[in-house]
Amino acid sequence: MRVGVIDAGSNTVRLVIADAEGQVPLPVHTSKRRLRLAEHVGRDGRLAHAPVQQLTDAVAAAQQEAQRWGVSAPLAFGTAVVRDAPNCTEVLQAVQDGSGVRLAILPGEVEAELAFLAARRWMGWRAGPLALLDIGGGSLEVAVGRGKLPGFAVSLPLGAGRLTREFLHEQDPPSKQAIKALRRHVRHQLRDAAARVRWETPQTTVVTSRTFQQLARLSGAPPGRHGPFVQREMARSDLREAVRQLRSMPAAERTGLPGISAARAGQSLAGAVVGHTALKLMGIETVTVCPWAVREGILLRLIEDGDATWWTSQAAEDDTANRNRAPLHLASTR
Image (cartoon, rainbow, N blue to C red; front, side):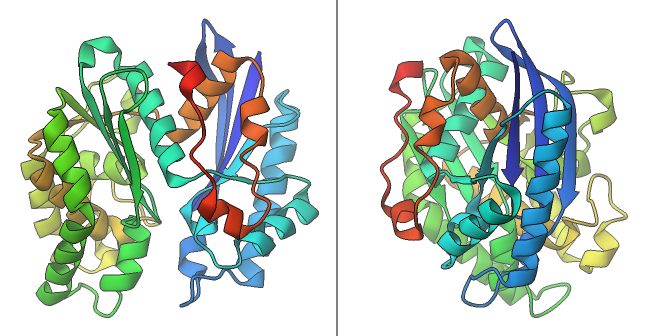
């Protein structure tokens, strides 16, 4: 069986095509279209006509590309940049009208559950009690548990792009006062989730997302060209040093550092602050970088269920429903 997923995120629209062999999604093709949607979010959080049209075109192109690779109906979803937009309903309708693709909007807690599922599958049972951190452009997902799925999962408005716009946009590089204000905000938002993680005492902590991958590379982890099976770890002290290094230079200069791409240079500092603050609050010294995340979690769920019935219920009807919808029931995968 060949499966696919389209991920409309804060920075890119990504397509992943995989073959399901032995209940494992083996990638056969990936592509991305850089949109930087988060940079076009208005002060009120709305997405304007131009970026919505770009999103529509990118989703349509990804859909056509998936069909050429043998996947007629890839599962497509929008992340926090779409989910949190006050005009979410209009955005979803515009994308569907222009591309024929209905983006599903997953509650943040479901994204956390799916990322945890992917991390558990990648790390295996020898990882023991597992904690997961996933920094996106708009949100931070935290999950912890001892089984296939987390016992606790939460999504917080602590994405690297969001926090850069809210706290670090006035000066480049930002002032010490701005960074202190950002740290204070992150500590306040993370207080309860961090307490739960400390109580669970995870044996292994996994981080995922491009933000963490780039920060790990900055901290000396092997580059991506070495493949996904190379062990990549990062210490809390590495993140502290990353904060010190990134805050000392303008965003444009950060692209000269190992791992820091031009597309994410501006938000790399906020990502490092969130990562370091989270690990400090949770009492975690070292993390493992996992190449699988939400997209792979979706593919795993599709492979294990054998159909996409569970997915169709996630397609949003309106933005009010997005905010009030109960979390996706994943009990059948336990």
